[in-house]
Image (cartoon, rainbow, N blue to C red):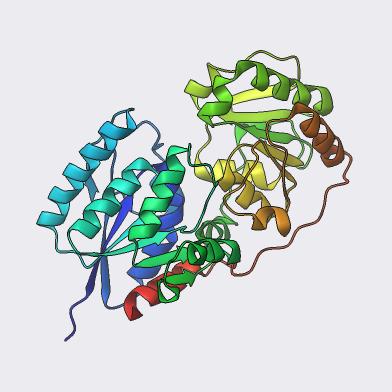
Length: 356
């Protein structure tokens, strides 16, 4: 009888759980493959809301490495040390890492130093700004990986252009779509929408540290939202640390604490439009066919712009004014789902792991 493959799924931060939940569901239905879920953080991590694992219908991590620090270099070193100890104690054939965090890079380095197979989920994404720490992480992780799981053609092209061998690259699609399709009928209408009609509100999310640090620019962007929204409610689910940094503007801005996964899914899928600096939120907007404005000059998945409902305005308040005017007037472009954003990404990944 053949021995099952032993897979370690390494998670660096909360958004990663949404991306690995579909893989765990497929593994649990597949013979010949077992897994353990390892989280870099602590069991009492405040970013992991109590309902998260029930919302995603997935188990809690098997192992918490307990690394909790702000300095990226210190975090990298501590994750490397803790993850090496984990691999010494747990027989592992393949490690799957997700996205582009410092902890993700740390796990990737340890994996390859131990001679294990490394798979990178959401490979081939680039900002082409080497000043960004995440860009360095992406280059290192992709360069070390044996299996590069990409979301689309543009990511494939980047990986190929940087010298990755073709047999390592697999365009599996966007794993976020798997979670969205699975939970589509499970969304929960949040209390912050009480008295507000579906399709008659805007959603605003802000998270990027660089944007939050530039108070003048942020003030102009928020004022543009206020000017164009008028009497249309703007719902802003934000982390407490973000709320404390926001300048005050006069508008129908309703600031609420971060929502759980199922409530946030309802909020964004039923909105008139979304203003965000998050690539993941823009991808979800494309899935829901909801107009989306991204407060950034680039996106990890250009498909959301070329085929989807997303539009980049950078951090330019005048461009935001124009885009919001068109959004509210119903003059937004229609969007289509990119190739392989079909909710079957996890199935492809597991079959590749079994066959590679």
